[in-house]
Image (tube, rainbow, N blue to C red; front, side, top):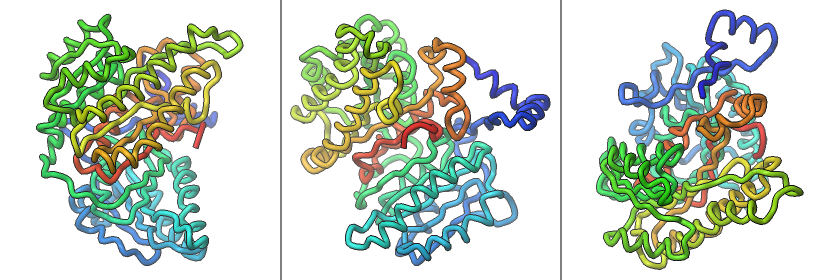
Amino acid sequence: MADRYLSFTGTAPGRFLTRRLGLPRPAPLRRRSPERPDLDGGLLHLTAGKSDLDLAPVLARTGPAPDDATGRPAAVVLDASGIRDVEGLAEVHAALHPVVRSVAASGRIVVLGAPLDPADHHQAAAQQALEGFTRSLGKETGRGITVNLVRLTDAPAAESTLRFLLSPGSAYVSGQVIGVGAHETAAPYDVDRPLSGRTALVTGAARGIGEAVAETLARDGAKVVVLDVPGAEADARRVAERLGGTALPLDITAADAGARIAEALPDGLDVLVHNAGITRDRRLVNMPAELWSPVLEVNLASVLRTTDALLAAGTLRRGGRIVATASIAGIAGNAGQTNYGASKAGVTGLVRALAPHALDGHGVTVNAVAPGFIETKMTAAVPLFIREAGRRMNSLAQGGLPIDVAETTAWLAHPASGAVNGQVVRVCGQSLLGA
């Protein structure tokens, strides 16, 4: 369903009324397109504190061209990884205070920080301060500008992350804190089609967000397996045929679902996207077991069983990626969704606990995307006032699109994202609910 308020605020009367009444003024977001795959404008690289990071080669490969200081920068990268005390935070203010106003609409601000040092509480305090600073700035900038914090120790390890955050693909990702581990050398890949030669399976891919994820992974070169329930087989085959992939009609809650996937993919799998999910909303006092159990079974139990089976069978090849779908409901909670919130919080627990073991034992990373209000057929059926509240209660004051979740998934699936592990990244426009 079209966001008519967003369209109205782009007109002269809309701008006048929203300004006079103090109403949200969402800016149309600049998303990736074949014609405009990159941000328009230059990149401004700033430093606060003494940094040991050699960022110049990485930024030359991942971001817009260096800014010539004559126009509005499309992106600002502030390296604050060397900040070790409260006094150093003054340099953060001094670096960004003069330039924030000049960042172009739909621009990007990325702050680089360091992991917290448990042996130095002054460093830990200063670096933790960057999190509050970044999230607060994200709520101030407006004009479709996103602000994120990346904690890293190794610049090359963050290459795929910086490429994503400094691109139109991250239009609905803001206020996030992303940890990047030690550098892991990626196998050679095609920059334009990084998933070429790789096989990706997406559950619940016959429609909605799952279909967008399948499309985006196919765009990036993957051979996509479109998995959905047998009742959606016709739609799954339609999507698979359009993307040059294959359809796999299968009930993901079946006890032997993992074994059947492994049998269907004898040559192995590189990317596993757990997208299938359902809702059965009702307040707990009115929720019978028959509404509770299916949600936990589809959204969480099947994810656990299938992941365990495919790792045990060796179907997921080394260098593989698992991307699960969590939700803002599992972070902040949502009235009428105790079942759904529990299931999605469970996905977060799965990711954080499994990630180090899957990487050490199988060479596979495990991450999650946590969508907020995304414009789908499901949200279009939400009552008007609740729908409008969902759209406006984030820093970008609008709902996201399925492609926003898909672009984030594609980044986590990237061959060069091996240093991104155990992360839960919200795709919510920096929702005002949750952390």
